[in-house]
Amino acid sequence: MALPAKVNIIDVGPRDGLQNEKQLVPAQVKTELVHLLQTAGLREIEVTSFVSPKWVPQMADNAQVMGQIQRRDGVRYSVLVPNMKGMEAALLTQPDEIVVFASASESFSQKNINCSIAESIERFAPVVQAAHAQGIVVRGAMSCTVGCPYEGDIAPAQVEYLARLLHDVGVDRVDVADTIGVGTPLKIQRALEATFKHFGVDNVSGHFHDTYGQAIGNTLAALELGVWNFQSSVAGLGGCPYAKGATGNVATEDVVFMLHGMGIETGIDLDRLVDAGLYISAQLGRPSHSRAGTAIAKKRPVQEGAATGQICA
Amino acid sequence: MALPAKVNIIDVGPRDGLQNEKQLVPAQVKTELVHLLQTAGLREIEVTSFVSPKWVPQMADNAQVMGQIQRRDGVRYSVLVPNMKGMEAALLTQPDEIVVFASASESFSQKNINCSIAESIERFAPVVQAAHAQGIVVRGAMSCTVGCPYEGDIAPAQVEYLARLLHDVGVDRVDVADTIGVGTPLKIQRALEATFKHFGVDNVSGHFHDTYGQAIGNTLAALELGVWNFQSSVAGLGGCPYAKGATGNVATEDVVFMLHGMGIETGIDLDRLVDAGLYISAQLGRPSHSRAGTAIAKKRPVQEGAATGQICA
Image 1: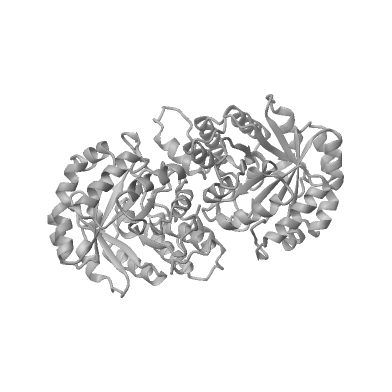
Image 2: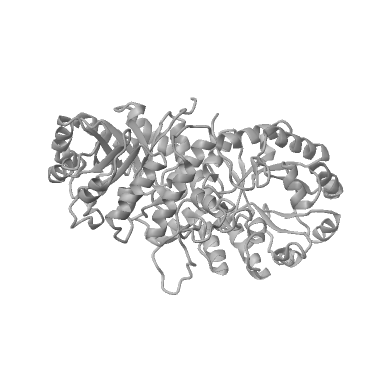
């Protein structure tokens, strides 16, 4: 089939990315990152999560960050919410979208959130109802749709089962996430096709990790099935908790480089996006994990006094 | 079309890779690298070049390395040769294949080898004849088939022109190289299709650089056109001379991870390949540029006294 003419990128760097970085990042820096992303043309940004600060100290400043953002019309600000307690706090900050999460792997669900897949969905069912009562969209993040750190390969039937449960509980759209980055193009297509049994292609996004260097190939494979929503993380923020020191989320810069190279519109200014990646990499004091971001930055003329951040491949 | 069932990988790390690394690597280390690659199952290895040591000091030990290799049946050892002087030296070392090179960009040809594309081909015409006189295969490396550091985009017509000249001079097979890594899937497919006008798909290999993180997507795009020969470099050896500090050759480990994940045979043992990448990265004192190699190494149990090399994403 023909590739989509337009693609929508959901940058998950401020939440999914920074949550998996070791150091705590000040709320002011997170806010600036969101501002740089929206300046670059991002129209969906996953900002923070309303999870217990005991478990995720990196997101303890969730309300502060949501309050500081200078919101722009046409930009959707989403937040992750695990339960009604989190939802009550989240609603005070007026998010545009709520993200709930579940795993396609029973073992991962048990080890990660200490309950079965079906129980995890019962747990957030009232969150979905509360969101819809206020006209807020709910996105379901499906983790381990290709492989699981405990079970290995995940069958497409498991993905279809999870997609059905999410559809039945009322989730509006879903992410097909390759949480540990072991997916390759044909496996990704099988996971997407399993999801299409319950969600139309317009409501399915690809969320690929670059741990084994496969995310760009997987993105192409998803585009070939008509998928036009993708999650990625500026500068490749966020490592892989299952292979410490390895790469996690695919870098938004690398995805946008491919899309623009194929004549696909994103509404994103790649140079401004690279600026955002250099900013947050410098704040973290580490190189960008984006190859396109690194190459573009390396080719820029060196300006005296300019903060280019640390960059490498 | 259906993807190929088998793929042949040509590891160019010992030549194209090490030639673009800053430091000089001892002949013994190069020899060990070739041995590790053939142990991992590689059946084509680009070993060295017979270029003036004044221009390429990294390859001054060419005859020594070719002499030290314990050759295996069924493995093709290729060497790069620019002219008849190099050819005379190369022939003494009994290579299985001679590699000649030319650019699809006139500006690149002028700046790189100080002559036009047509002149560069006249220059190595006697090399092709000498090789064929001894029954040696000749491969033509076509550089800058998508983009050029001086001209920007390269039109498919330029690639077709170069492929025609190479065909007419008697070259047996060609590489479609994205020398600066700016290619994206559709542009790569156009360059390949231009090449197919003069060479059958069995005699065309893809040679992609990961400078902008695109090589794995481009490999998938080439597979979709039936291409089943690819050049890559273990551990991503070799930087990008046009964006210093950025990534060059795609890592063989990342390509093999994708192929095996799609059920495509390569004859390569990925674990042994990762060993080869860790060996040469440790010798160079720098992290591997392979994401798959890094992730696989990170998951290995730490063995006391084991040299795992420096690894990072």
